Image (cartoon, rainbow, N blue to C red; front, side):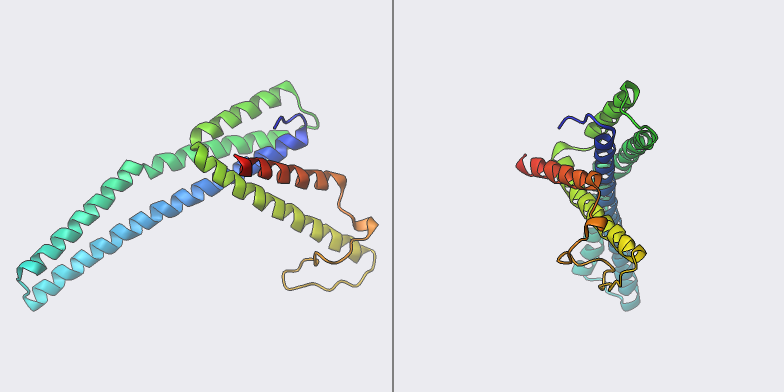
Length: 211
């Protein structure tokens, strides 16, 4: 989808930056899981060795257990180096920082100019080279859904603020948000810009679903 306005550029940068953050979060989670497995295996190996020494277990089976666990630990360590978690995380951090920088510049612009458009295109290139296409599809879909929920929640929040300022009695639900079935007064109806953003995110999400 062609982005030809400053608001579209900002929304696109936000969603893609969030997608990179989600990708980094998942990568960190995977890395931590592998490291925790190595720690558990190492502690188990040491525990078995201590038990063998205390109880004098010298059987062939007991002798093989620490060897097997040590081999599995070494294999896990090799897999971590092979998957190169640290370098991939660094690439995602750099791409995310670049998107954030361009987003800050876009927020300080009232109109879209050639300089900002050039930086936007460079940021998109770094994004596309920092994450695989199949992963980018998954995380962009999650990011669009998350951004849409944030915009909806913000709309409910400002509706409640307007109602409070108008002297209306407000009953908050458990999640401190207005029920979706509650009618919205014309004075508190969301601005057209907010509705346009929600519609744009929904459209992009539909496009991703069809890929």
